[in-house]
Each structure stands twice: as structure tokens, then as C-alpha cells.
Image (cartoon, rainbow, N blue to C red; front, side, top):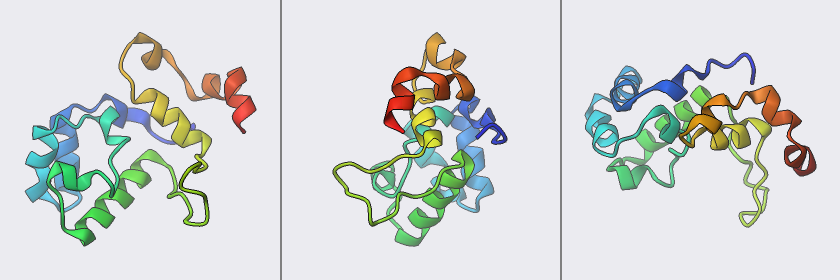
Length: 123
């Protein structure tokens, strides 16, 4: 995780729209800007919620979701895990915390997150 560039967390809606365009999907720029998807909100973008943004082409959804996971440095949850209690990697849990706004989330570093007592108990 420490080698992953976290710059995307600072992206505004226009930065995210530019990134979507760079993936070859200029037709979806407005979907991201009109829904105010910033870098922090991009953490929650997956195939489950892309239709709510206006993206319904299944193949496009798969590509965009895969590229988001790639950007975030996380892997897809294997199908063999329970839906009721899916396992999440430390990186995914960290990004979930970083998706929040505010000084506390801004200050949180990955190594600090790993040292938190409640984090250690979830491993």
C-alpha cells in the first residue's frame, strides 16, 4: 500500500472526469461530474452503484470497476466469501476510512492505520 500513489484522494470532480475520459469513456464524464464524484468518493464506485450514476453498459461497468480497483490498489472480493461478512484487505479498509472528509481523515497515514488497536483485532 505504501507504494501506491494516493494522489487520487485529492482529485475533484473534474479530475475524476478527466481520468474517466483517459480510460476511453468520455461519454461518462458528465455522469461523474453531475454526481459530484471526487477521488474520495471514487473509493465506493463499483458495478453495484455505476447504474445509479447513469452507466448501464455491463462491459463498460466491468472495465471501469476494474480500473477503479486498480487505481486503489485493491483486489475484488472472491465469490467464495460470504456476502453477509465479506473480507476486506487492510488497503480496502484504509481507503474506506480515507474516503471521509475532515482533518482526522486527512491526517491518517496507512502505517498509523495498521497500528491502531481495533485494526489489529480485525486481522
